[in-house]
Amino acid sequence: MAGATALGDLGAVEPQELLPLMMQLKVLTRKKGQRVVLGQQYIGELIDCLGDRSLPAAIAAEGANVILNLCYERQNVELVLNNNGAAILIELLTSTEEELQANAAGALQSICFHPKGRQIVRTLGAIAILVQLLSSKSQSVRARATGALHNISSDGEAIREIRKQGGIKSFIRLLQSRQLSICGSAAGALQNISREIASRTMIRNSDAMFSLVHLLGSSELQTQVCAAGALLNLLGRDSHTCYKKRASIVRAMRNIMLASIVRNIFFTQEVRTLFTSLSQQ
Image 1: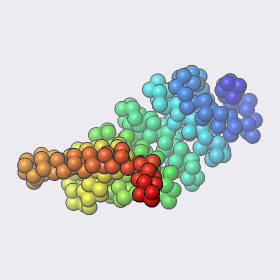
Image 2 (image 1 turned 135 degrees about the vertical axis):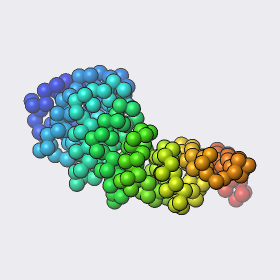
Image 3 (image 1 turned 30 degrees about the horizontal axis):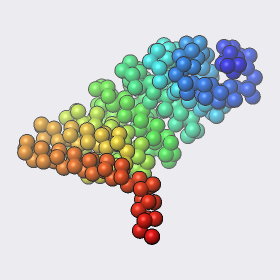
Image 4 (image 1 turned 45 degrees about the horizontal axis):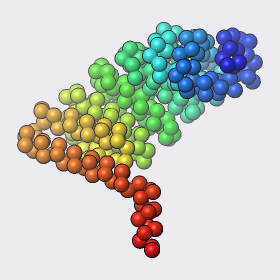
C-alpha cells in the first residue's frame, strides 16, 4: 500500500514515479475491499491529476482505468461526480490517443451504470462524442464507447439525443462486429432505444432485424438476451404484426436460443475433440 499512501500528495510524486503508481493502483482497485478504502481517500487526488492537461497520455490512460475500477462501487461514483470527474473524463474522450479514449469511455461506462451518472454524463454532452467514437478504427475504443452508450441509453432523455446524433445507424452496423461484446452492447442499446416510437420506426425500416435474429444464435448468453429483448420491443403492440403471428415469432426466437444453448453446452471444444478422436478409432 506504499503507492496508495504516496498518492495522498501527488505534488510530492516525481513524474517518473507516477506511471508505475497508477499501474499499482489499477491492480489494487480490482478488489472490492481496496476499492472502498482507496475511493474514499484518493478519488479527489486522482481526478485533480487527470485534469492536468500536461499529464502524459499514458499516465492519464492508467488513471482512467483506476477510476473505471473504483466506480464499480456506488459510493465512489458519487465521489467522482461530486469532484467534477465526469466532465474531465469526457474531455479525455477527445484525446488523439486511442488507449486514453478507450479507458475514459470505460470509466464513463462504469459511471453510467448508475442513474445519477447517466443523467450527469448526458447533460455534459458526452453522447455526441461517444457516438463519434463508434466509428473509431480501434476495436477497443468502439467496444468501450458502445458499452458506455448502452448504459446511457437506459435514460429516456438520452434516447432522443442518441437518435439525433446518428447513433442508431452506428449500432445497427455494429451488430455485425466480429467482437461479441460489441454486438451485445449494440443490441442492448437498440433494446433500450426501441422503447421510443421514432427510434423504433427507424430500426424497423433498417436491416437490423436480420442481424438481431442472427445474434439469437450467439455463443454468448448476454448477447442473445439483448438481441431477444430488442426484437421483442420491435415486435411491440404498435406494430402491424397480429397477435398470433407475434406469438409464433416469439416461439421461433425461443427455439433458436434454446438450440444455441444446447449447442454451446454439448459442443464445446473438449466435446468436439472427443468426437474427433472416437471417429478416428
